[in-house]
Amino acid sequence: MTSKIRLDHELPEAITAWGWKYHHTGIPTKTVMPNEKYLSQFKFYVSGIDTSPFGIEWMRFEKDSPISQLIQEIPHIAFEVDNIEQELREHNFTILTQPNSPSDRVRVAMIEHNGAPIELMEFKK
Image (cartoon, rainbow, N blue to C red; front, side, top):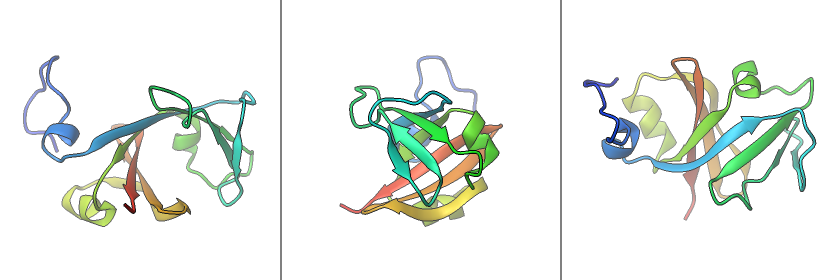
């Protein structure tokens, strides 16, 4: 995917060339966190993203959560994109989670790159 070596001071290609925007970092935890919200369709709890100035999201999974084990164990970074399907077509990503709508006015997909989960988010404006 990347055609050149990125220098320390340069932003990632996903931002500079593809136009993606940082949204949050999701961190798996086994600790019950304040103000958790339960996502029953995915059997996990999320918290922190609505109050963190850095976009930190805590995720606590139930044992039988259908979410990919990679996402349950490794922190992920999330980017806002204009069109999830277009990004999936243009890049040869390994898809962990097909595009879906976990809440009103948002669609997400999870991909894997070099062993790391990455979330793509598309918002209805």
